[in-house]
Image 1 (cartoon, helix red, strand yellow):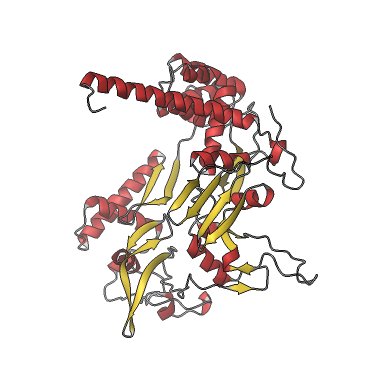
Image 2 (tube, helix red, strand yellow):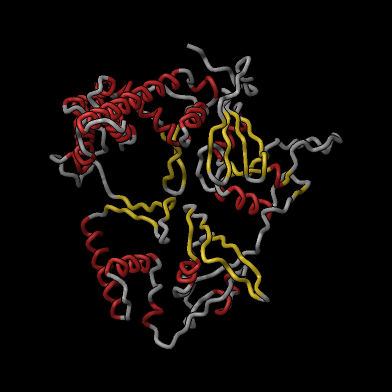
Length: 485
């Protein structure tokens, strides 16, 4: 490579790019073939996405109408060998099936090398999750239009194209306020979302929103007014920072009131009250006007601490569970210094102590210890927070052991507990996936086909080569073996 001319280097780069695009197209084809091997009845239920909606979750298929269903547990093994999460593997399979069965023209162009796989997957993602759902005829219309321009459509054009399909095939509910000449109005783009999993090192999160014109103008005026008010009160921060702080004040409704109250000092103390109706000003963080604590956001920050005489000295940096990012002690101090902030101090938990109980239920202290140790679901490549996960007995607990006078094979003890999100908890219980804790917080997993993975605080790594089995893995009880083709 060192002796290549400029012309040869460009040719090599072009060839590598073509190889990459061919490999991505082949990966889609292989993902679809993996799905063919695993219809729902082969292992368990069909794979779906669980989508939060209205405080509840509903299930959404991984591909559109007319695509074959896929056994949900086969997805995890595909994600394992690719080094991606189960959710990402679901998307890969869903996109492959959507393209093969509902977007055949685009699928053919991908494998002919005329459309990159990533661009085709963007189209598939849109048609899968369209609201209302696209029928086979409607998605066929989208396929024909996109294929005609070799997939070269941007997000806005694609949204309009889907809206046109919804209007053409009369899929939307009648809207008396909609302009019947403009299919765009059948697709409502309004949304407001905050990426709580991506925390910047500066202690910020990204928010994105698309509002109605009147709402957007109202918010803009409120932010401009809030930023001007903060400047008048002596803030030296930039306009962008003041607008961001004003948005936070809007969320807390009346938090900024203290800034205008001269002579009123808000008390900030450790919250030890368990009954809000009997709390006093000193233990709720309320001001003399008896206004309630306005900021009650819960953050879990962990800092190393040492004793210096009779004082506890915290290190300058720590770890915040939300987003799994570093956080500065000064940032925590500044957040707690805002008006009417309620501060709760929880007792220190030694992660090296082995805790145990004779009961099946996991006590709160033991649960907290396991959560702090594992940080996330311990399944390979999964990053779902441990605080929202189940606590699994690695060696299953036997409820009849004590009554029958046998030793308990799966005790409720620190060394036998791990955090698993609900999906991977079910996967471990109802499939041939198995794992062991080889050291505190370090787990080794074995997949049904013998692939092995190590998961610890640094992440997940493959343990190669996979185990060679003389026969297929045993079937879980009551679950038939996958069909072979």
